[in-house]
Length: 131
Image (cartoon, rainbow, N blue to C red; front, side, top):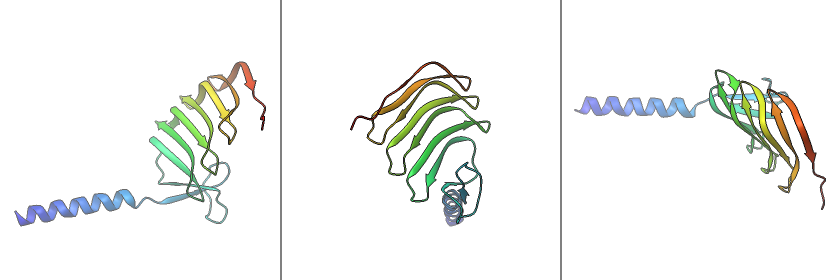
C-alpha cells in the first residue's frame, strides 16, 4: 500500500510540474517568435489547439482566441494594454465571420460591422469619440 501511495504522489507531482512549467514564447508585433529584448507580447507554450491567451509584457491579457486544427475558430477577444476590451468577434476556419465590434478604452463602441469568410460585408458603422 505504501508503494501505491508513493507512485500516485510521484505521478501527481510530475503532472503538476509539467502543467506549470510551460515555456514562455516571446512574440513581436506580428506575433512571430522573437527574443525577450525585441518582444512586445508573449504566450505560454507552443499550443495552437483549444483556448490560447497572448499577453503584453506587463502580464495583462492581449488576446484570447480559440484554435481547432491550428486554425482560428470561435470567439476572439482583444484588449488594450490597460485591460479594457478593444475588439470582439468570431473566426470560422481561420477567417473572420459574423458581427465584429471595436471599442474605445472607455467601453463605447468605435466601429461595428460584419465579416463573411474574412471579407467586410454590408454597412460598417463608425462612432466618433464624444468626450
